[in-house]
Image (cartoon, rainbow, N blue to C red; front, top):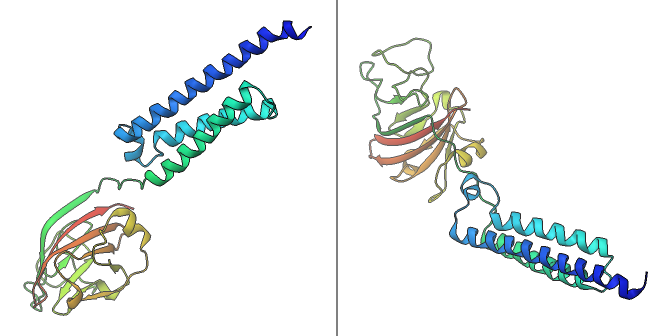
Amino acid sequence: MSDQERLPGRFTRGWAVVTTACALGLVTVVGVVADLAQVEGWLAAGGPPVVRVAAGFVLLVAGSVLWREKLRRGWATYVAGAVAVLCVGALASANVLWPAAVPADPEPVLVKTGYRLTPSWNPLTNNGDKVDLDTACPGWGSTKAKVGPKRCGELADLIAETHGLHAPDNAPRLTLLAQGEPASYAVCRAKREGVGTIRLPDLRAGVELCVVTDKDNVAAVRVDSVTAGGEVVLAYRLWRS
């Protein structure tokens, strides 16, 4: 077959490659627009933004074209090379503008606000200084003898004293977060090394802490108010393990 006879086929293939590259480039543009508009649900769900998926797919196709053409001079090589460069730039820009999304916290199974703990040495009122976070009810201490008013909770997870908050038997289940660090499911799941007691001077309004309950559930606790005598008002969310 002569070169003149091969020319129409080459021309057709070249235009097919150009058309395909343009179509795939349009997909990338649509992905960028979708990312800018934040209309893709994947970002909120913790998945990669559309632009990364689109650019990655187009780059894969462009790379396969370059591999098939063996980098020979021609329309296919030039177009695929240009598309590949654009995709690499799009991926780099996307990673800078939209870092990998952090998965959203699951819905807590229990939310409680305004829970007041008041230190007590009186057996008649010793249900007011303890809270079982798993049930949002007054809890019991770690002693076997159940002395004091009846209560709907089981083992307490937080006990208020005049010197601060502590876990039963000072078990290392409490983690005080740095100022400004919000407590969340992801943060608290990652912080598994805690302390048994948080001293009163460290408890201020707005401070947040993580608690691992006796049932190994995770609670994100916020201190809403605290008095000099150790009375605290808490709000918390609880997630089952």
